[in-house]
Image (cartoon, rainbow, N blue to C red; front, side, top):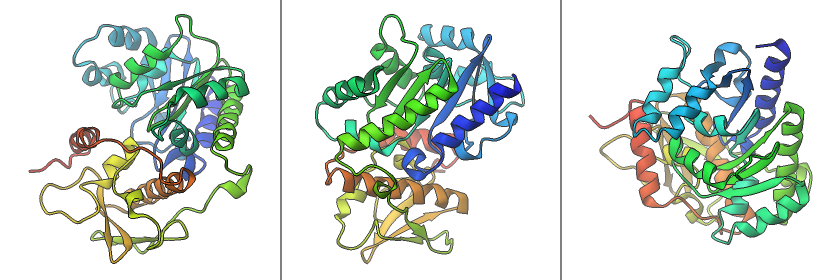
Length: 329
Protein backbone atom coordinates (compact mmCIF):
# COMPACT_ATOMS: atom_id res chain seq x y z
CA UNK A 1 0.00 0.00 0.00
CA UNK A 2 1.51 3.33 -1.06
CA UNK A 3 2.12 6.13 1.42
CA UNK A 4 -0.29 8.38 -0.51
CA UNK A 5 -3.13 5.87 -0.26
CA UNK A 6 -2.37 5.31 3.41
CA UNK A 7 -2.50 9.06 4.09
CA UNK A 8 -5.79 9.40 2.19
CA UNK A 9 -7.31 6.54 4.14
CA UNK A 10 -6.42 8.17 7.45
CA UNK A 11 -7.74 11.54 6.22
CA UNK A 12 -11.10 9.96 5.37
CA UNK A 13 -11.24 8.33 8.79
CA UNK A 14 -10.46 11.65 10.49
CA UNK A 15 -13.24 13.37 8.53
CA UNK A 16 -15.88 10.76 9.32
CA UNK A 17 -14.81 10.43 12.95
CA UNK A 18 -14.56 14.11 13.76
CA UNK A 19 -17.61 14.49 16.01
CA UNK A 20 -20.45 12.58 17.63
CA UNK A 21 -22.96 13.67 14.98
CA UNK A 22 -20.99 11.66 12.42
CA UNK A 23 -19.96 8.58 14.38
CA UNK A 24 -22.12 8.27 17.51
CA UNK A 25 -19.24 6.65 19.33
CA UNK A 26 -17.21 4.19 17.32
CA UNK A 27 -19.60 3.83 14.40
CA UNK A 28 -18.61 4.02 10.75
CA UNK A 29 -15.96 2.75 8.40
CA UNK A 30 -13.64 3.60 5.50
CA UNK A 31 -12.14 1.36 2.83
CA UNK A 32 -10.32 1.37 -0.49
CA UNK A 33 -9.21 -1.03 -3.21
CA UNK A 34 -5.50 -1.53 -3.81
CA UNK A 35 -5.05 -3.72 -6.87
CA UNK A 36 -6.69 -7.02 -5.84
CA UNK A 37 -7.19 -6.18 -2.17
CA UNK A 38 -9.89 -4.49 -0.11
CA UNK A 39 -8.33 -2.60 2.80
CA UNK A 40 -10.91 -1.99 5.52
CA UNK A 41 -10.89 -0.85 9.14
CA UNK A 42 -10.26 -3.48 11.74
CA UNK A 43 -13.30 -4.26 13.89
CA UNK A 44 -13.32 -2.37 17.19
CA UNK A 45 -11.16 0.57 16.07
CA UNK A 46 -12.75 4.02 16.39
CA UNK A 47 -12.58 6.01 13.16
CA UNK A 48 -10.82 9.04 14.60
CA UNK A 49 -8.21 6.79 16.21
CA UNK A 50 -7.31 5.03 12.96
CA UNK A 51 -3.72 6.14 12.36
CA UNK A 52 -1.67 3.00 11.76
CA UNK A 53 -1.63 0.27 9.11
CA UNK A 54 -2.20 -2.27 11.89
CA UNK A 55 -5.70 -0.79 12.15
CA UNK A 56 -6.40 -1.90 8.56
CA UNK A 57 -7.18 -5.41 7.40
CA UNK A 58 -6.37 -6.50 3.81
CA UNK A 59 -8.89 -8.87 2.26
CA UNK A 60 -8.83 -10.56 -1.17
CA UNK A 61 -11.41 -8.45 -2.99
CA UNK A 62 -12.67 -11.07 -5.44
CA UNK A 63 -12.94 -13.69 -2.70
CA UNK A 64 -15.02 -11.33 -0.53
CA UNK A 65 -17.34 -10.70 -3.49
CA UNK A 66 -17.43 -14.40 -4.36
CA UNK A 67 -18.35 -15.33 -0.80
CA UNK A 68 -21.14 -12.74 -0.80
CA UNK A 69 -22.64 -13.92 -4.10
CA UNK A 70 -22.35 -17.56 -3.00
CA UNK A 71 -25.29 -17.03 -0.61
CA UNK A 72 -23.55 -19.32 1.87
CA UNK A 73 -25.60 -19.35 5.10
CA UNK A 74 -22.45 -18.85 7.20
CA UNK A 75 -20.78 -16.18 5.07
CA UNK A 76 -20.53 -13.70 7.95
CA UNK A 77 -18.64 -16.25 10.03
CA UNK A 78 -16.40 -17.17 7.11
CA UNK A 79 -15.45 -13.57 6.32
CA UNK A 80 -12.88 -13.39 9.11
CA UNK A 81 -11.19 -16.47 7.63
CA UNK A 82 -10.25 -14.40 4.56
CA UNK A 83 -8.10 -12.07 6.67
CA UNK A 84 -4.40 -12.73 7.33
CA UNK A 85 -3.56 -14.49 10.57
CA UNK A 86 -2.75 -12.11 13.43
CA UNK A 87 -4.29 -9.27 11.41
CA UNK A 88 -7.38 -8.81 13.54
CA UNK A 89 -11.02 -9.20 12.56
CA UNK A 90 -12.18 -7.16 9.56
CA UNK A 91 -15.27 -5.01 9.83
CA UNK A 92 -18.49 -6.99 9.41
CA UNK A 93 -19.44 -4.42 6.75
CA UNK A 94 -16.72 -5.58 4.34
CA UNK A 95 -19.32 -7.17 2.06
CA UNK A 96 -21.07 -3.97 1.04
CA UNK A 97 -17.76 -2.08 0.86
CA UNK A 98 -16.59 -4.65 -1.69
CA UNK A 99 -19.60 -3.76 -3.88
CA UNK A 100 -18.80 -0.03 -3.95
CA UNK A 101 -15.36 1.61 -3.96
CA UNK A 102 -12.71 2.07 -5.01
CA UNK A 103 -12.94 4.57 -2.10
CA UNK A 104 -15.85 4.21 0.33
CA UNK A 105 -16.77 5.99 3.57
CA UNK A 106 -19.59 5.13 5.96
CA UNK A 107 -20.58 7.26 8.95
CA UNK A 108 -23.55 7.12 11.31
CA UNK A 109 -24.48 10.63 10.22
CA UNK A 110 -27.29 12.03 12.38
CA UNK A 111 -28.59 14.37 9.68
CA UNK A 112 -28.92 11.56 7.12
CA UNK A 113 -30.42 9.14 9.63
CA UNK A 114 -32.98 11.70 10.77
CA UNK A 115 -33.91 12.56 7.19
CA UNK A 116 -34.81 9.03 6.08
CA UNK A 117 -35.90 7.46 9.37
CA UNK A 118 -38.84 9.64 10.39
CA UNK A 119 -41.63 7.43 9.08
CA UNK A 120 -42.17 9.48 5.90
CA UNK A 121 -41.44 8.27 2.36
CA UNK A 122 -37.62 8.33 2.18
CA UNK A 123 -37.74 8.45 -1.60
CA UNK A 124 -38.78 12.11 -1.50
CA UNK A 125 -35.73 13.53 0.30
CA UNK A 126 -33.33 11.21 -1.54
CA UNK A 127 -34.66 12.48 -4.87
CA UNK A 128 -34.12 16.03 -3.66
CA UNK A 129 -30.58 15.16 -2.57
CA UNK A 130 -29.85 13.58 -5.94
CA UNK A 131 -30.77 16.83 -7.68
CA UNK A 132 -28.73 18.91 -5.21
CA UNK A 133 -25.62 16.73 -5.19
CA UNK A 134 -25.61 15.71 -8.84
CA UNK A 135 -24.89 12.03 -8.11
CA UNK A 136 -26.97 8.90 -7.67
CA UNK A 137 -28.64 8.88 -4.26
CA UNK A 138 -30.64 5.93 -2.92
CA UNK A 139 -32.11 5.00 0.43
CA UNK A 140 -31.59 1.53 1.90
CA UNK A 141 -34.06 -0.15 4.29
CA UNK A 142 -32.80 -1.07 7.72
CA UNK A 143 -31.03 -4.44 7.91
CA UNK A 144 -28.68 -6.03 10.46
CA UNK A 145 -25.03 -5.36 9.80
CA UNK A 146 -23.00 -7.78 7.73
CA UNK A 147 -24.30 -9.76 4.75
CA UNK A 148 -27.95 -8.82 5.43
CA UNK A 149 -27.17 -5.12 4.99
CA UNK A 150 -24.99 -5.88 1.94
CA UNK A 151 -27.94 -7.64 0.29
CA UNK A 152 -30.11 -4.54 0.76
CA UNK A 153 -27.32 -2.33 -0.63
CA UNK A 154 -26.93 -4.62 -3.64
CA UNK A 155 -30.68 -4.46 -4.36
CA UNK A 156 -30.53 -0.65 -4.44
CA UNK A 157 -27.50 -0.35 -6.73
CA UNK A 158 -28.12 0.31 -10.44
CA UNK A 159 -27.18 -2.52 -12.83
CA UNK A 160 -24.04 -0.58 -13.68
CA UNK A 161 -22.63 1.03 -10.55
CA UNK A 162 -21.96 4.77 -11.04
CA UNK A 163 -18.47 6.14 -10.38
CA UNK A 164 -19.78 8.12 -7.40
CA UNK A 165 -22.89 7.87 -5.29
CA UNK A 166 -24.63 8.20 -1.94
CA UNK A 167 -26.65 5.72 0.07
CA UNK A 168 -28.79 6.84 3.01
CA UNK A 169 -29.25 3.89 5.34
CA UNK A 170 -32.45 3.89 7.34
CA UNK A 171 -31.50 4.05 11.04
CA UNK A 172 -27.83 3.64 10.10
CA UNK A 173 -26.34 6.83 8.60
CA UNK A 174 -24.88 7.35 5.14
CA UNK A 175 -22.41 5.77 2.73
CA UNK A 176 -20.48 7.65 0.05
CA UNK A 177 -18.27 6.12 -2.63
CA UNK A 178 -16.17 7.47 -5.46
CA UNK A 179 -12.99 7.13 -7.55
CA UNK A 180 -10.91 9.51 -5.47
CA UNK A 181 -10.61 10.08 -1.68
CA UNK A 182 -10.74 13.86 -1.99
CA UNK A 183 -13.99 13.65 -3.95
CA UNK A 184 -15.46 11.24 -1.39
CA UNK A 185 -14.60 13.56 1.50
CA UNK A 186 -16.10 16.60 -0.24
CA UNK A 187 -19.23 14.68 -1.20
CA UNK A 188 -19.71 13.47 2.38
CA UNK A 189 -19.48 17.04 3.66
CA UNK A 190 -21.99 18.11 1.00
CA UNK A 191 -24.34 15.29 2.06
CA UNK A 192 -24.34 16.51 5.67
CA UNK A 193 -25.00 20.12 4.65
CA UNK A 194 -27.79 19.12 2.24
CA UNK A 195 -29.49 16.82 4.76
CA UNK A 196 -29.45 19.51 7.45
CA UNK A 197 -30.88 21.97 4.94
CA UNK A 198 -33.76 19.60 4.14
CA UNK A 199 -34.39 19.23 7.87
CA UNK A 200 -34.74 23.01 8.11
CA UNK A 201 -31.66 23.48 10.27
CA UNK A 202 -29.48 26.60 10.14
CA UNK A 203 -26.22 26.15 8.21
CA UNK A 204 -22.82 26.22 9.86
CA UNK A 205 -21.55 25.37 13.35
CA UNK A 206 -24.61 26.91 15.00
CA UNK A 207 -26.59 23.81 14.02
CA UNK A 208 -24.23 21.52 15.91
CA UNK A 209 -25.04 21.16 19.63
CA UNK A 210 -22.60 20.26 22.36
CA UNK A 211 -22.66 16.65 23.42
CA UNK A 212 -23.57 15.50 26.92
CA UNK A 213 -20.92 15.25 29.61
CA UNK A 214 -20.35 12.22 31.83
CA UNK A 215 -19.73 12.47 35.55
CA UNK A 216 -16.80 10.60 37.08
CA UNK A 217 -16.83 6.98 35.93
CA UNK A 218 -18.92 4.69 38.10
CA UNK A 219 -19.64 1.14 36.90
CA UNK A 220 -22.96 1.25 38.76
CA UNK A 221 -24.05 4.35 36.85
CA UNK A 222 -22.32 7.57 35.75
CA UNK A 223 -24.64 10.54 35.29
CA UNK A 224 -24.91 12.17 31.84
CA UNK A 225 -25.71 15.89 31.93
CA UNK A 226 -25.85 18.86 29.59
CA UNK A 227 -28.12 21.19 27.64
CA UNK A 228 -29.37 18.35 25.44
CA UNK A 229 -31.14 16.80 28.41
CA UNK A 230 -33.40 18.07 31.15
CA UNK A 231 -36.48 16.80 32.91
CA UNK A 232 -38.50 18.82 30.39
CA UNK A 233 -37.28 16.75 27.42
CA UNK A 234 -39.70 14.01 26.43
CA UNK A 235 -38.32 10.78 27.88
CA UNK A 236 -39.59 9.01 24.75
CA UNK A 237 -36.34 10.18 23.17
CA UNK A 238 -34.59 7.59 25.31
CA UNK A 239 -37.16 4.81 25.36
CA UNK A 240 -35.93 3.03 22.25
CA UNK A 241 -32.71 3.00 20.22
CA UNK A 242 -32.65 4.27 16.65
CA UNK A 243 -29.27 3.00 15.43
CA UNK A 244 -27.56 -0.40 15.77
CA UNK A 245 -24.88 1.02 18.08
CA UNK A 246 -27.54 2.60 20.27
CA UNK A 247 -29.33 -0.74 20.58
CA UNK A 248 -26.19 -2.33 22.00
CA UNK A 249 -25.60 0.47 24.48
CA UNK A 250 -29.21 0.83 25.58
CA UNK A 251 -29.03 -2.69 26.94
CA UNK A 252 -32.30 -3.70 28.55
CA UNK A 253 -33.90 -0.27 28.60
CA UNK A 254 -34.31 2.69 30.88
CA UNK A 255 -34.98 0.85 34.13
CA UNK A 256 -32.23 -1.20 35.80
CA UNK A 257 -33.17 -4.83 35.24
CA UNK A 258 -31.77 -7.86 37.04
CA UNK A 259 -30.73 -10.87 35.04
CA UNK A 260 -28.66 -11.17 31.88
CA UNK A 261 -26.22 -8.30 31.39
CA UNK A 262 -26.66 -6.08 28.33
CA UNK A 263 -24.27 -6.33 25.39
CA UNK A 264 -22.16 -3.31 26.33
CA UNK A 265 -23.85 -1.40 29.14
CA UNK A 266 -27.17 -0.09 30.40
CA UNK A 267 -28.85 3.29 30.09
CA UNK A 268 -31.44 4.16 32.72
CA UNK A 269 -33.34 7.05 34.26
CA UNK A 270 -33.41 7.90 37.95
CA UNK A 271 -35.24 10.96 39.27
CA UNK A 272 -35.42 12.48 35.78
CA UNK A 273 -31.67 12.11 35.32
CA UNK A 274 -29.80 9.90 32.83
CA UNK A 275 -27.30 7.32 34.04
CA UNK A 276 -25.18 4.81 32.17
CA UNK A 277 -23.64 1.77 33.86
CA UNK A 278 -20.85 -0.21 32.22
CA UNK A 279 -17.65 -2.08 32.94
CA UNK A 280 -15.08 0.21 31.28
CA UNK A 281 -14.61 4.00 30.91
CA UNK A 282 -14.07 3.75 27.15
CA UNK A 283 -17.52 2.17 26.77
CA UNK A 284 -18.98 5.10 28.70
CA UNK A 285 -17.36 7.52 26.22
CA UNK A 286 -19.10 5.77 23.32
CA UNK A 287 -22.42 5.78 25.14
CA UNK A 288 -22.19 9.53 25.83
CA UNK A 289 -21.83 10.20 22.10
CA UNK A 290 -24.63 7.81 21.15
CA UNK A 291 -27.12 9.27 23.64
CA UNK A 292 -26.10 12.80 22.62
CA UNK A 293 -26.75 11.93 18.98
CA UNK A 294 -30.11 10.38 19.78
CA UNK A 295 -31.27 13.43 21.72
CA UNK A 296 -30.05 15.70 18.90
CA UNK A 297 -32.03 13.76 16.31
CA UNK A 298 -35.09 13.78 18.60
CA UNK A 299 -34.89 17.58 18.79
CA UNK A 300 -34.14 18.05 15.08
CA UNK A 301 -37.19 16.00 14.06
CA UNK A 302 -39.56 17.27 16.78
CA UNK A 303 -39.72 13.75 18.17
CA UNK A 304 -40.53 12.22 14.78
CA UNK A 305 -37.56 9.89 14.43
CA UNK A 306 -38.62 6.27 14.06
CA UNK A 307 -36.90 3.73 16.29
CA UNK A 308 -35.70 0.21 15.71
CA UNK A 309 -38.47 -2.22 16.53
CA UNK A 310 -38.23 -4.63 19.45
CA UNK A 311 -37.28 -7.62 17.29
CA UNK A 312 -34.43 -5.69 15.67
CA UNK A 313 -33.17 -4.54 19.05
CA UNK A 314 -33.33 -8.05 20.51
CA UNK A 315 -31.42 -9.45 17.53
CA UNK A 316 -28.70 -6.82 17.93
CA UNK A 317 -28.42 -7.50 21.64
CA UNK A 318 -27.99 -11.21 20.97
CA UNK A 319 -25.37 -10.46 18.32
CA UNK A 320 -23.55 -8.06 20.62
CA UNK A 321 -23.70 -10.43 23.56
CA UNK A 322 -21.92 -13.05 21.50
CA UNK A 323 -19.42 -10.68 19.91
CA UNK A 324 -18.45 -8.92 23.12
CA UNK A 325 -18.63 -11.93 25.40
CA UNK A 326 -21.43 -10.65 27.60
CA UNK A 327 -24.03 -13.35 27.03
CA UNK A 328 -25.89 -14.58 30.09
CA UNK A 329 -24.17 -17.40 31.94
